Length: 267
Image (cartoon, rainbow, N blue to C red):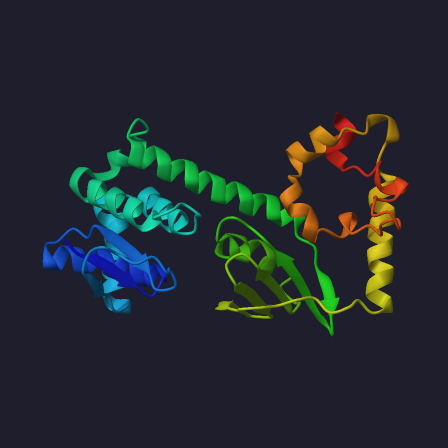
């Protein structure tokens, strides 16, 4: 009965899988380094070895399927509690039964993993539309607060569309940042980041965006429930159009009450 502790990286997790097979042991827990949870079992530290990680990564496609490898990659980015144990069980099933395991939707392990991966992919898709950049000393910067670790999932989208720009996307939830400059991308740990006070040019751009946002709204079709369905409120704190000045009593301005999105025009 042993618990594995690793550095929290995807390569580190793959090395845990490797260690399990070469030692012929099944860990009762696989814990990332940053997690404060104390195990009731003896802990073993697993070093991250790129060669071992590559062997396991290659085997996911060869012994199971490319779909299974993609599912493991996305599953690792989810906010599932004890996601490592779930992924480990899925990989063992795949090694034993092959590609068919990805279609075992009645199995709790496969079903839970698929739902979590879909949720992470859906959240990444929403953020490609909800993310708002601000200019900070010549660099575009944005803050997001996602449930899942979506930076690897949105990297290609923003890097391809802003290829000639320098930008930073800070994941406030997981203290990570996607940093891009022409020809180079990196996802780095970052404990804290905050936007500076906007200069006059940035304020003008924000005002223009808010004016556009309010102009396309149709007062007679104001539907807050529909808006929250398509644009959940947990994203609003980082969206320019919702950063409305308040009245002295703390209530929102009247012109903000009829804000809407293009989707609301169809309601």
